[in-house]
Each structure stands twice: as C-alpha cells, then as structure tokens.
Image (cartoon, rainbow, N blue to C red):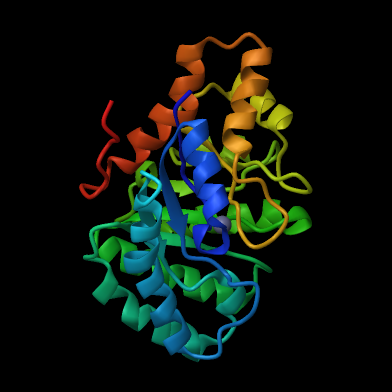
Length: 269
Ligand SMILES: [Zn+2]
C-alpha cells in the first residue's frame, strides 16, 4: 500500500509516528498551520511556528524518508483578536516562497463569528493576490452546516478564486455534496472520537464518487490516529474495493490536487 497524509500536524507527533507512517506506506505528509492547543501570545509565536513548519519539520520528516509540505495562516480559533490576525497576515508573505509551502491554510471558521469571517476574507484575498492554493477548516458539530455555507459564499464571492484550487476539509454527510457541487475538493477527517469514522468515509465515497475527495488523519496533539488513512484503506478493501480504486483515493487524489502548486513534487514511483 502507498498513501499520502494530506493533513497531519506533525510538530505534535513523535518520531515513532513518523516510523509507523513510513512503514505503512506513507510517501509524503502535508501540514497545515493550526492552533497549538493554546493561544499564542504574540506574532512572534507565529513567526517561530512558521519557521518550524518551513525549516525544522521538513528536515525531521526527511529523516524518515518522507517529503513534508505545509500551509500557512492564523487559524480561526485565534483570529478573534483582529490586531494579532493582521500582524500574522503581515508576516505570511515572506514565508510563501519557501520550497515546501503549498498555500494558505487551514483557514476557515470555528464559531462563525464576525471577526473570524473578516479574517477568512483577508486570507482568501492574500491567496488570490499571491496565487496560492487554499485549504479550509470547517467548524465542528452544530456549527458545521452554517459555517460551511458561509465559507463557500466567501470563496464564491471572490471572482479571482478558482474552486478546483480549494479543498474544504472535515466534510461530513450533510456538507460533502454542497462542497463538491461548488467545484471544490473535499477532505474527510478520520477521527476516533468525532468528525468521521473509516466506515462513514467509505459510505461517502460510495455515495458521492471518488473524485475530488481525499482522506486524512488530521493527527495533532489531541486524541487522533496518525495511521487513520491506511486503516480506512483496510475498510475499503473489506468492502471489495480494488487496489487501483483505493490507490486512487489515498494516493493519486492528493497528488492530483496538490500538483496544482508547482512546488509539489509527486513522490518517485
Ligand atoms: Zn488540522
């Protein structure tokens, strides 16, 4: 089996996780900027985090034979503070030329507040001006449907944004269709306690086709499973999916989407 982990917060994970992922067939890992589990106190905290994502973590991943790519932003959870958000948006451009940066993400909404929405629009503007791909986080549970609609409207209202260059992550049964209908890609996050199980992800793939969809573990500092993608592949195999079809979802689809960035290099065959 070969696969790509398109959404893993590897700075929170151990070297054992890298070993297990590589042993399971992971070819490369992509790490969106995220909440650290606590609010950073200043723009300097983000500066150091962006240095970690663009310099240290790719070197750490390389020790396990994995290419490492990243996405930059201030996450929605910390964007209530408009002053901080503007400061962080101000330092992102100088990191955009780093060789492993694929785009802006994971942006989006958390509580669907007015300030979050404004910061989302600023990120979308930055992505449009600098021709970056976009990776979007959608809110949890009861806020997901409304938040997803708000996010899709922000993307649609900016005529510079090409829908096929945006992936909307953490979709569930009630949001996947609207995301695909707008021409975006959709990500399914496999979590042991919330979001989506392997069985639900396989159901969605069977209902909505397997194009413009990927799966990720979104492994981070909380309860999460770095091998969730290969485990989901076992579920698909159990259901009688062919090896080619599984490979299409867990390996070729992420390559297809991320290759829209000239910096992404498909792993050697
Ligand atoms: Zn994430």
